[in-house]
Length: 119
Length: 136
Image (tube, rainbow over all chains, first blue to last red; front, side):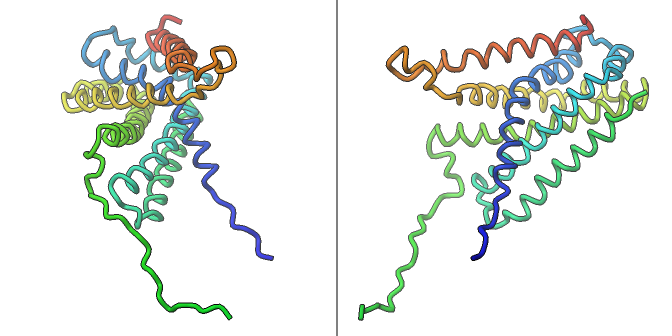
């Protein structure tokens, strides 16, 4: 009797789901402050020293790593499905999966590399 | 012996317009919500750039701050915020609506079902903002 092929879908849906919560809870305030309020002068920019001191805290780095990793995988899964369904690229499913999840893995490795050691 | 016919009907494949998401507001809203993923990835890359420049030193971080002041980037960031807020609100409204059914004898209204999510969102936003602004 041949064993049924196991699907990878539960793993990517799990990463998508957790990333969805992280993106919803935490990304808006990052964009509001670093992307809009500080550049437009709507809020006082804490500057290099305070921001770097914040990055030196291991808990900040753990938070940033979890945020970036889950958000990348959330985005990768949704981008794959968006390109496949909305832009009708279903025939390129394998390539899309490779590019999207591959991109998320590269982003996660980059995050580990940058956040592992901060002097 | 059963009689089999050699006739093989073709599977029915309805033709779909390449712009099907423009047919109804619900479809367009779905397409816009799903497109938020591109902006999530975009801001993760921006955050990685920010971390890299922070580690590289004050001069590099000043370049990052100058990049953030560029009008094109500000427009992109405003778009990203709009799309991610759409993602957040639609995500919070997805919570199961059965929790209070036993008490209310009807499906839980959207607002009550999603209120805990919005409260956690507010709390998380406040805590992260206070850390970023250097209050803690």
